[in-house]
Image (tube, rainbow, N blue to C red; front, side, top):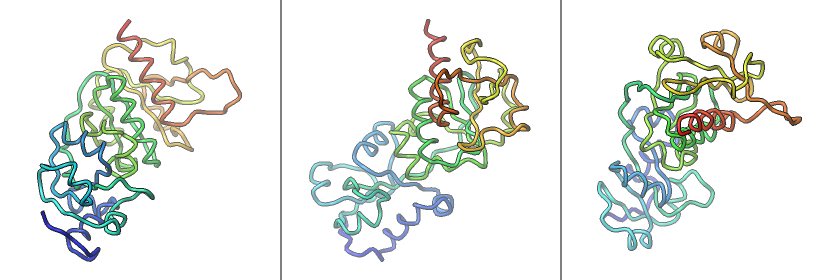
Length: 248
C-alpha cells in the first residue's frame, strides 16, 4: 500500500475528475463513497481499480483488491463529495451496458435530480423490477449523489441507456405514461407481465409528444390538496402497485 500526501498526486487528481460526468465518461470510472457502499459493491463482485482511505479505516478493512492508498483526512475531503465523508472512497469501472430485459421496468425520461434517479433505482430494485431505463437527457446514474441515493442497488439492478423512441420500438409490453391528467387511475390497470412505467421531468413532467408514445396515460389518485408528487415517489408508488399485483 502506498501512502499519498498531496492532492496534486496524479492518482488523486484522476479520482477527483470523476466527480463530473465528463470525467467519468472519459475514464470509464466512477466514485463509490463510504464503507456501506464499498461493502455492497464488493459483495456483488465489483472490483475497485483504486481505493483511498485513512490509516484507521485500513486497519479495520484489510484485503481490498486493486490499488490501495493510505491518505490523510485532507485528501479524503478533497476526493469526497459529501460535507462529512466516511473515510473511504473507491474508484470502480463503469458497468457494462446490459440488454433490455422483459418484466417490470421503469423509464426515467429527462430527470435532472440525481437523488431522484438514485431513489428510483433503489425503489425499482426493492419492487423486484427487471431494469431501469434512462434516456439521453436524464442525469447520469453514476454521479456521486445518484450512487449514494441508490444505496447499492446500482450494483445489482441493470440500468439501460437508450432513447425513448428506441425503447418504444424494442418494448413488446404496454407502456404507461404517468401524467397528472391521465385518463385512468393507476389502480384500474393490470400490471402483471411485461410492464413499463414512463416517468418524466421533475418540474415539467412529460410533454405531450413524449406521453403520446405510451399505450396509456395513467394518474395516481390524490385526495389531498397537493398538486403533484415527487418524481421518485410517483415511480415508487407505481412500482409497488405492480409488485403488489404480482404477489397476490
